[in-house]
Length: 332
Figure 1 (spheres, rainbow, N blue to C red):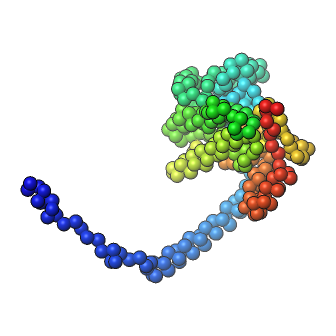
Figure 2 (figure 1 turned 90 degrees about the horizontal axis):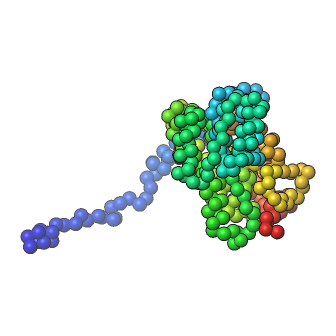
Figure 3 (figure 1 turned 90 degrees about the vertical axis):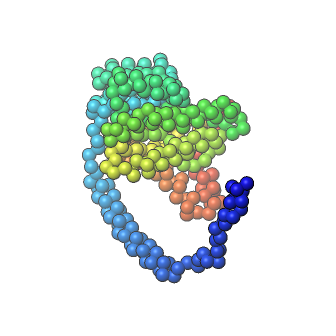
């Protein structure tokens, strides 16, 4: 009873709402305005410097990084871009680690590397959509080969049909291979890169990660996710002083790997499908020159993104319909 009486006597603090200032302080406004102007002027000076630096680098590009002796892990080396990347890095003196769920195709790639007399190459069977499998195989790689210094997340799938014709199992598989696998490989290999403050991570998104396309709703969503992952990871890493872990995001147009079964291109001679070997060369160029983002062909990102900022919505859609390309349903 005493406690009850005591609690009744405790007075709650009274807040005088009228005493809280709702009007901004004029002097504070002027101070922040002047500070913003000074910061903006400093930013403009830096922009001029950055533009000049870019022009100088364009005219006098620095030599590309050597990849000799690097340990390069590539997913999806059984065919297509992944196979071409494996051959390229092996030819430059890298130790290549090929991951693929198709053991037979992966072994063919590794055998081809050996027949060319290149340095060692290793084949591992891995379901990259399975976190436990990725971490297990990654542990074997570290024990048998060493710390991975270049990680290339290349593997992906691209079923093409209207959204409601995709099964939930298929959508989960698309995200498991195209998106979640990126997280699992980062979980496996980024810690050693951070420990050594050294490494390079390359992720293949797609031009479908820049613009939405018919018959590719889940695929586009997965590739937009990869784009967001890499942009956010770049922000996280660059916040660390003296960071020496580089990232490259690649956005290819349609590539002749067998994924684009029914391509429809308005101007096929002006915008032909890309060859895996040429795409692989561009990817290596980006990695060796620390290029953060690159569309293939190079003009494609500007062609897709600039109109949406400069043109009315209907004009941008009209441009897309006139000059665009898409993939027809693979169920036809």
